[in-house]
Image 1 (tube, rainbow, N blue to C red):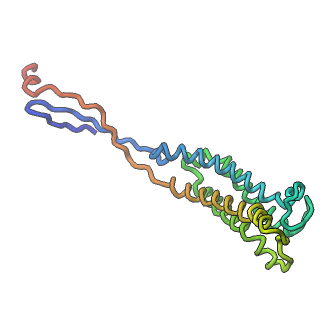
Image 2: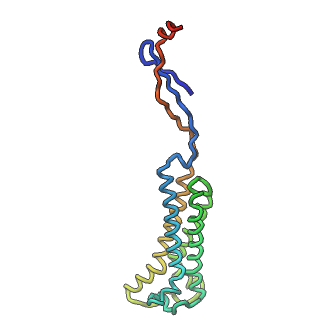
Image 3: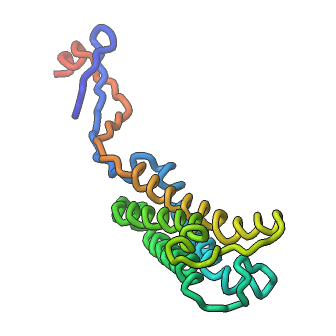
Length: 207
C-alpha cells in the first residue's frame, strides 16, 4: 500500500506501508519466550515435587520421617491412594508438558496443556486433603499418628499441604499459560522510510 503525503508547496513525500500478517505466538515475543522457559522449568519442578509426594511414605521412614508410623517401603492401599496415585499422575503430566513445551510455545496443543493443568490441579488438591479424606472414605484409622506439634507440622507439610500446594500451583500455572497465549494474530503495519518526490514543476520541465 502506497500513500502520498504533501509536505509544503511543490513537494510530496511517498510513504509505503506494508501489512504483515504476524503469527499469534510472535505478537508478544518477550512474553512467549518467557512462557516457553516457564513451561519447561515448571514442568521439571512439577516432576520433582510429584515424585517426592508419591514416594515419601515409602522412602521417608528410612531417615526417620514417617507420618503414619509405617516402616520404610511398606505397601498399603492407603499409601497407594493417598500418595502414590496422585504423585504418579502429576509426574506423568509434568513429563508430558516438559516434552511438548516447544510445540505449545509455537501455538499448538494449548487445549491439551489446559487439560493437563486441570488434572495436575486436582492431584494437588487431593494431596492436600487425602490424609483426612481417605480415612473417612475407607473407614480406617487416621493417617497421621500422634506426635509433638513441631513434628506434626513437619508431617503435614511434607506429606500433604506442601506437595499439594506446589503441585496445585503448577497446574494453575499451566492453565493460566494456555489462557494467556490464545490470542488471534492480526495484521501489523510496517512503515518504510519516506522518500521525497521531485517537485511537480521540475518534473514537468525535465519532460
